[in-house]
Length: 141
Image (cartoon, rainbow, N blue to C red; front, side, top):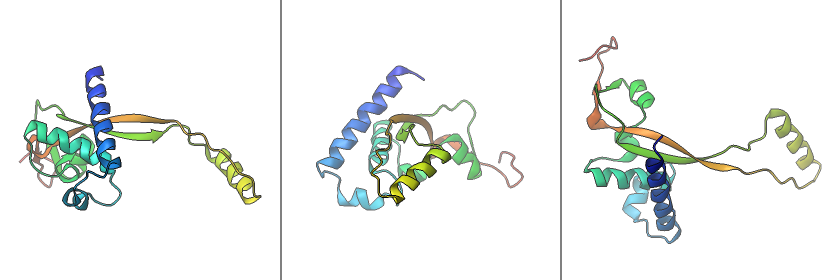
């Protein structure tokens, strides 16, 4: 992954975080964000779409290679992902045995401090203008 792409995505995340924390998110924008979708992640993708002059909504019109394929589309030959998405994943999640021990301790009334190790996860998105519908048989139209 290019270091600049990662840095740009992190910078956009920081901007989105500031917008959300200061309450600058417009009601019209926040109403368009589907349930379960990160407002900050949505804003990061939306900002890149605006910069590239791409229309649409991030969740509907920008998907990973796999999501487009699952939806019955294929990425056009020669196209490269134009948009970088970012989310945060906790890499310190306990395994099943550790989780069971934590639950037992909590049930006994103990306070258990769980490890938190969030790191950014970068993913690449294709806009709807970069894909084409597949036939029912999985072949190009």
